[in-house]
Length: 149
Image (cartoon, rainbow, N blue to C red):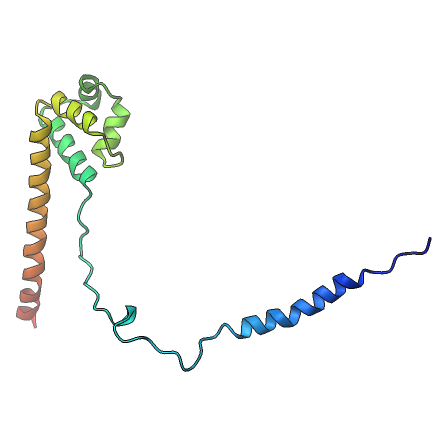
């Protein structure tokens, strides 16, 4: 049997693809007559980003749980034992890393001598206080800039 010649199909595929790739790549530039549509995405007014993002509920909850525990001079192990959870999990909740269920929050509230409703009110008050402080700062900032100028 004679030696087989190279497959002509593979060669033709390689050479026929190369011009197509070059043509496609050169067509990726934007057409010179394209323009943005009035009222489109680029024309919308953008709201300024707040300087301090609003805290997540789990972060505010964790801060309040830690404050209550420390006010009672308790360790993670003591509070977690009464709530029926591990100290590691309580630590993650206090740091805002875990989103506890309502049952878990109720157990933690009970272990810290408060109710689920009471704890919720405390966290809500803390969040309201932060929001009001942020609003006062953002309103006072332009006035301070005018006085400095």
